[in-house]
Length: 142
Image (cartoon, rainbow, N blue to C red; front, side):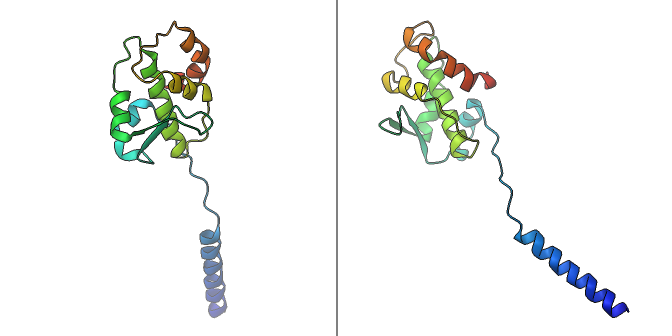
């Protein structure tokens, strides 16, 4: 009797082991991080940097990680191109790391037309056109 109990326990252990190891891994969700996180964690950046100003995956400028971080650290001082750059760079890195899709192409188009540091004010028509997208995408970390 003890022999059969031992065999049953051993069989159940083997079945359980295979069931656990054969189960599909659950999807790990990367929680989105703020621009402050990305500015202070260059080691977490994927792809060696970020493509900014790409509209429908066309064009744009590739900024290596160190250069992108330097731009992200620039004080806004009324220049919304820096704020939008921070938002887009963080959103792109979040997406690259699996935080889910972000997409607001109008911010990329804005940066395609207005390079970081070009002095676009918050009251300008150019920024006002994308302000709802900027607020929706970036307001949660302000």
